[in-house]
Structure formats: C-alpha cells, structure tokens
Length: 139
Image (tube, rainbow, N blue to C red; front, side, top):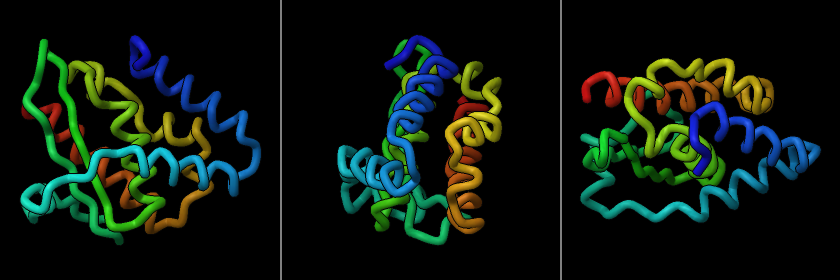
C-alpha cells in the first residue's frame, strides 16, 4: 500500500498505462476482482448493498484501526468486482480526512475509467465512492 491516496493512484495509473489497450485493462480489472475475499452471506445484505449500481454490489466497513478506515466489498459481476478492488485499493486503510479531500472524479479520469466504462457502470462506480465518502464523513 502506498503512503498516500495520490501515491496509490499514481501506482494504479502506471499499472494501467503499462497494459496498453482496454482489453488488457479489463482483464487486469477482472484479475484484481478475483483477488478480493468474498463476503459472507450475512454481509451480502440490504444493509451493505450499494444503491445505484446495475449489478449487485455490497460494501462493508470494517472497524477503524489507528484512525484509518477500511472496507471490503463484493459483486455478482466480474468486472464490477475489479472496480471494487480499485476503489478499495485507493480508499482502504486511509484516514477519513484524506478520503474526503481526494478528488475521486479526477482520479478516475486519470485511470481512464471515465471514458472506458458505460454510463451505467460509471454511475455505479460513483455510487460506490459516494458510499465510502459517506462512511468516512460519519466516522
């Protein structure tokens, strides 16, 4: 994990840049999603469901440790699991103030996700980020 959210974004941007075309990037996203630990059936509840996503998406906030917030997530769609992995890689294990100060739209644009995803997927990705920001603001 990089020291700051901006550093993590730079690492992700480098990974995506090295992959070249979007077919390879989509495969990489799917691979990132496969590495996520699945949530339990109990965690796949309406309480954890992210509204605004076309696919089923669940995000679970773990207890804060040392002032840093952390989440886990899952989806019923492979590509969306990869998007969750990117979001968790960026935001998990960070202080709330850093999460709230980060310009997520600019970050997603830097990764090229804004242009590469359908409107429906982009809206779902924004819903995931909004959920994390709400959790951070409430902590």
